[in-house]
Image: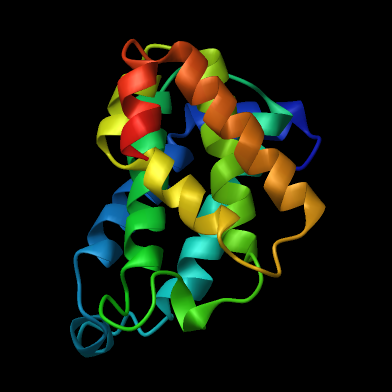
Length: 172
């Protein structure tokens, strides 16, 4: 809807739609599937997370802004956290992934924009395991070239902006 349309993106930003989307991400991430169904919110987490991440990515690319980026970074990292640990014991990524999902691409594109726009956010992202999530995507045997370059760009931006980049790289 807003792809390439800076005017519509501005209206959505002024209407605080990104903030609403972020609050919904936090709300849905904290609920179990049974609780979501009981509350008449049966949309699967994966579909919701993909749509939300893609929306935030498209909005940032259509009309870059620094307003609300901290909240968006936290929401996007929540998406990665929930996606990576939804089946905690069996698989790190959903469905024992052999490919990178759209949710991961959109999330990393938006996070890359945020860390480039607000370099001071890098430390907070690293504390919230951003490097771990990036490394997990790189482990996927079927990861395509675009995903690999995107994740490397994100890691490079994080490490060049973070204050303790040597320590962080060693921990990852």
